[in-house]
Image 1: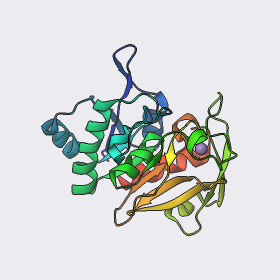
Image 2: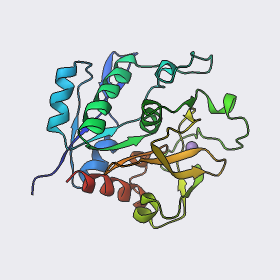
Image 3: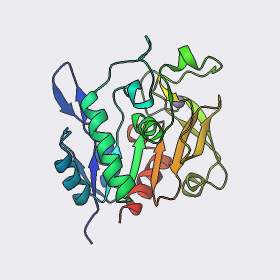
Image 4: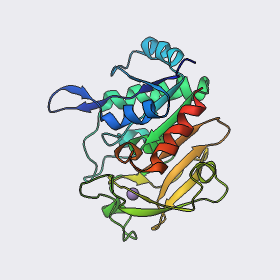
Length: 235
Ligand code: MN
C-alpha cells in the first residue's frame, strides 16, 4: 500500500537565511507509516494549491511567534521575532487544504496557536507577562524529551480515546499560548494552570493540535500514538 504523503512546514533560521527541520517531525511521521515531505517556504498561492492536492495531510510545525496582526492585536514588547513568510504560507495552506478540502492536519506548538488565531481566537503574547495566574513554567531547559508539567486530558475527547489516559506528563517549550479559544475548536487537554494545550476542530475528520512537542519525545509511547492517529487519518 502507498504511504500517505504528509507535507511538513519548514522551519526558518533568519540568522542563516536558511530552511531547516527537526528530524523528529519527519521521524514521527515515517515511524507511523507516513511519507513526510518537507515543503518549500513559499507564499505562491498556485504552488500551495498544487501542494494541497499532492499531500494527504499537513504537519504545522513549531517555530517563530505568530504575528499579532493575525488576531488583530498590536505587537507587545514581549512578543518574539516573527516569520511573515511562514504566517502567510500557513494561512493560505490552512484555508485551501484544511478548510476547503478537509485534509487532515496536526499542529504542534506554533501549530496550535496558528489554528486558534486563523479560526478567530487570540494568544497570550507572553505567558509570564500576560497569564500571571499561572504558577507553571512553560519554558523548560533541555533535555526536551522529559516532561515539564502535566496536562489533563478531557474524558471522552478523541485524544482521550487515542491515549487512553486522563493525565499526561508533557514537555513545554513555549512562551505564548491560547488566550481566547476559537469557537470552532474543542479543548482536549489543559495544563494544570488551566492553559489549553490540546484541541481539535469541530466537524472535521482530523484537525488536531497540541502545545507540547511529541517530535522531541518519540521515546514516549504517547508521542508515537499521536503520530499514528494523525497518519491513520491521512490514509
Ligand atoms: Mn506548556
